[in-house]
Length: 358
Image (cartoon, rainbow, N blue to C red; front, side):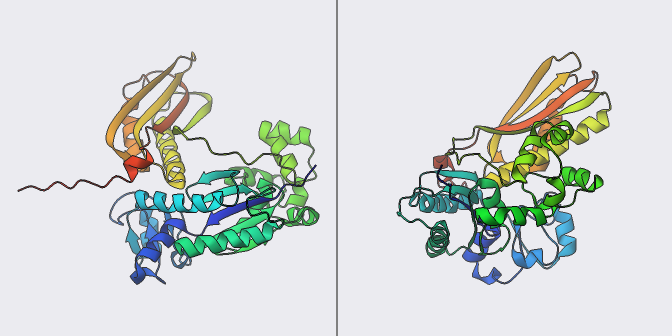
């Protein structure tokens, strides 16, 4: 079987880098993209200069202001970022048609067979980085390996503008030494659970058999068993147009705590918002799902004219919709929040018609 050659490309501080490119006066300064510091909201992304102050994506804006009060704060410009992302996607497709966009600023490429007729995936990755910079004046980091999991980890090791290769004969030692929280797919909560079991590195994780991991984590346990051994058979899948972004939670027991349900609804809204922001999407319809203790499920939706990806607004709408259910009077088993009705690329690129009062 032919060894696959997978490249993961991750644009460096994408939104902030686009703004620094287009606003020369901000180059070298801490730039925080996400909105006005006077309003509620979260950081979409920030420049490396801002990261030096401890600012990071998804941080509450008020915290970012406290950490870096002299930063340049900018509103997000999704039309512009989407246009730049399309330029980058066009570059990818000059190398291979096996491109899987993960978000607006990252993608997997399977270059096992490619349009350039090059055997070296490392040379291809360098060429992709070079062409991205020539066309957009933006830098990208690249990871090269024989599967998606390792390529993803590799792209994050030498940012910005880095290139890391993990060969099959290097994978075992690399994964053994990798801290558990650095494994892509293992979040903060799972990492904390592993550490409570004294599992701190890949070497520790590799000592658990698949039955134990499955008993502890369900189906994803089998995934952990594979990735710590460098096994990831997931193919690079050509993207299909996404129709909606949603998050839901099934409660461990039926809940009648209204305050907790409202907090969970807000949390889901912010998670949806972060997913939208990561993919450069904004929607014009918010839908909530509520499942009662008897498994009866209801949905409520609201549509509006201006697309949004703002977690506070999505949360406000979701809570308003919840008042049209029996969430305040019946035990709840599941709640969910979804945003849909995304503008087409043509709508995003349509010139804005200004209106003036005379």
